Image: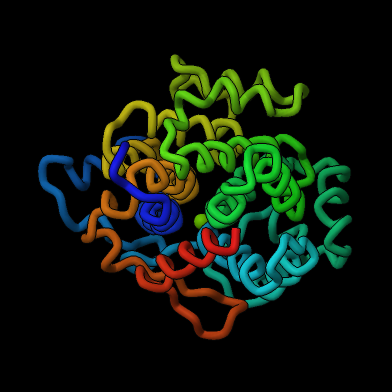
Length: 314
Ligand SMILES: [Mg+2]
């Protein structure tokens, strides 16, 4: 995709992820195909429908956590894991509509930032959920210009705040690198073999499987609330479509953890196609209430501004 500049792509990623989150939220835990059954591709309109406790266009915990990461990066001027963890804790103490089980357990454990997630993992809890991947777009935009090693390392460190299983960190690192490639104007799907070469060897085969050209979400061996099929599904949605809108439609149509799969897909697809490819009928109702940060509600202008500042400070 030529003719789209880096800032368009960065804004596309941040806004696209929030759009996916809000688009998918009403369909969470639902069956595959529910979205297109209700909103046929041939009759566009009304897709930001709300439901399951969410207002039309309201983004969920995925985007809220991503924006707390953004706030920390912008205010601290560096990656400060203790500060991000403290922001997550303030957020988790607020009146939330949703929070992941593992994220909640870790943030409320009373343990310090550098021990809480590891303790949860070592206690035998399932820790390879998609809850750190879902919030990765803002950091991926910020660290992209620093190159592959730096952005993948930042991904692992931020993931580890809530997800002690290194598998979650490796998946988030892959996502960061694919966003980096897209912001540079490259094709993230074509870059997959090279990115996989930088995944920790203990985790490479499993990611190679879900990121392979012939993989399909129905081949997943876990629900898409796990990090591997979530990332694989997002890449599949990008690979098998040619527009932002169709990628998001494919993601939500997978059912189950629709807000998060679509948030991850939207981050990737937004970086590839740019903000101009995100339908206005989806960005107009989009809004992100941000518990733990006053009464802020971010809409398109504020989200675009966050993306701009993340790039300029990156
Ligand atoms: Mg959510």
